Amino acid sequence: MSTLATPHAAATPPLAPSPAGQSRPFDAVWPIPVGALLCLVPAVPPVGALVAGIALGLAGANTRPAPTRKVAQFLLKVSVVGLGAGMNLALVLRAGMHGLAITIASITATLLAGRWLGRKLGVSPDATLLVSVGTAICGGSAIAAVSGAIKPKSHDVAVALATVFLLNGVALMIFPPIGHAFNLTQVQFGWWAALAIHDTSSVVGAGLAYGAVALGIATAVKLARALWIAPLTLWLAHRHRVTTGDATGSKSSFPWFILGFVAMAALFSFIPGSANVGHSVAWLSQRALVATLFLIGAGFTREALKATGARPLVLGISLWIAIGCVSLALVKFGLIF
Image 1 (tube, one colour):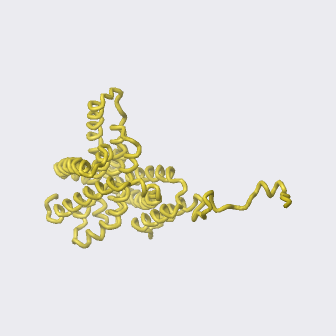
Image 2 (cartoon, rainbow, N blue to C red; image 1 turned 30 degrees about the vertical axis):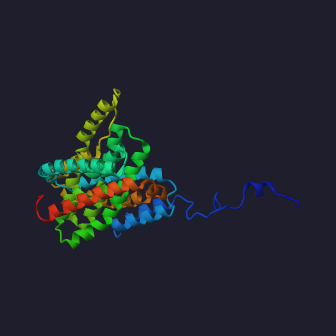
Image 3 (cartoon, helix red, strand yellow; image 1 turned 120 degrees about the horizontal axis):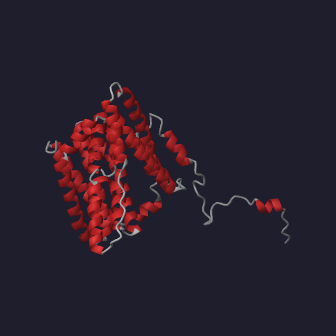
């Protein structure tokens, strides 16, 4: 049989489904950035943005998950800094001092419970520590900081982050309905969300869905709580050096965006007549946060779902349920504030 072909035909073969012979639902990069831009529309709720992002992520629309995560982390920090413009600095400091004993007790109890449960489940020590720290303090930010101190295997970091991320998405969707079911006031819900939800993004998202007062309390308490990343990371770095004999030291990250939040809050708290501008900046930051939640959801790919593993996920869920139930009871019966 003759196989005549022109150079043009050889250079432009017909489009094939995929190397594996299967059609792919998405071959373009546009669905994620376009979806994020649509989430800036005021009518889009935080939970809707997250669910839409997860759906696209699992469907394979996020063809560039690594850049998506970087953009999401950047927007998260910028959004939190901007939210400071609508906060009262005195409220943030009061929340931190008022919850000092609760913070120390809850962090210690979570770390001890996580260590005990991790041993029972046969989870690796590093993965146990990362999941426990992420649950106790500030989710992915705490995991990232501690990872720089103890130098765990990349697989343990991935498992811990995937576990915390999965629970963050669930918390953002179920916490507001649970709060309404238990007739929590906005102040009560703000405290509960800050104590029981891992990442700042989901804490702020849940508070935003519950109400303006809940958003303020949740953000202030969570950011004050996140400041404990610094001393805990330094202590873990010291323990790592002593245990392993590593004299080279290790660099640990610090959530500098918290200082930006404080600076923004101070700027619009103490400058006379700046309250209206501050509220406008905070509103824009809230919309940026909704887009951030979409990007976070889009990062939840099938590979990330598989990376959670069974035992670390059981550990994370167990700690999360325990912290959520205990803190809910304490808040409901007025034993925390």
